[in-house]
Length: 130
Image 1: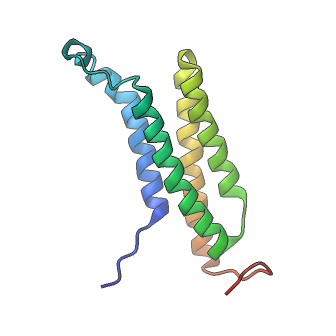
Image 2 (image 1 turned 90 degrees about the vertical axis):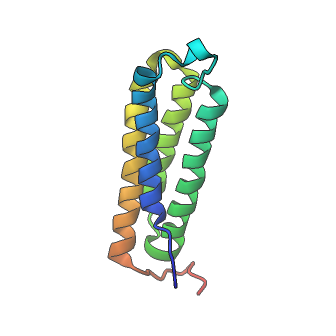
């Protein structure tokens, strides 16, 4: 049984889950502080989510770049999205203005990578070592 993980699909899913967390959790879980639980603006939780998105994105996009399409476009789009997520952590007052474009950029990067990998399947360049 040969099981493969679609890293772009996982990246898109985690990005969307992050957006849902950021948009819905404050609306649904406003009573958590009454019980001493603060997950809404918990810096450790937020940075962990950004870290997970970064790890999945780096693996997925670097694999697509090295083995399939040799295009920097998805990587550049992804880096812009991650920078916007970090900016969201720095400027909390404008959080929504950074969050929405960040998710759009990250999901777009995975989508571009997914499509590019399917078009090229396996592109050999001078730097391809196999």
